[in-house]
Structures are given as structure tokens and as C-alpha cells.
Length: 85
Image (cartoon, rainbow, N blue to C red; front, side, top):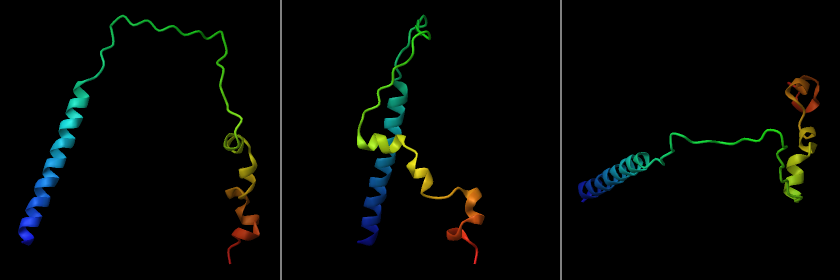
């Protein structure tokens, strides 16, 4: 009984690995075709506008308050919280 379970699991594992390899091969062979004469236009004279939402999470990410929570590694020898005992 134990050998049968091991054989079934080994067979399922092999099928799984073969399916992964086949998927990778199929996805690699289906690359999109880019024409030889592709023209890209870039306008460097106008500034790029960036949209930043006015949400609470965004404001926390943009602020610098989190830098003051822990001292920098250079300040560790002078800090009582990180003093070697």
C-alpha cells in the first residue's frame, strides 16, 4: 500500500514538472513580433506630469516622520537603547 501511494505521488510530481516545462517552452516561443522599422517619438521638452493621490497612505509614504523612529547606525554607540552591556 505504501509503495502504491509513493508511485502515485511520484507520477503526479513528474506530470506536474512536465507541465511546467511545457508551459515555459510555449510561452517562450510566443514572443510578440516587433517590426524592424519601429519609430519611437520622445518629447523631452515638456515636463512629465506625475499623479500623486491625496490619500492618507500616500501622505505617510511621502513624509519623513518614520526616519526619526530609530536612530541611524552611526548614532548607535551614543544611544542608550543600543548600549553594549
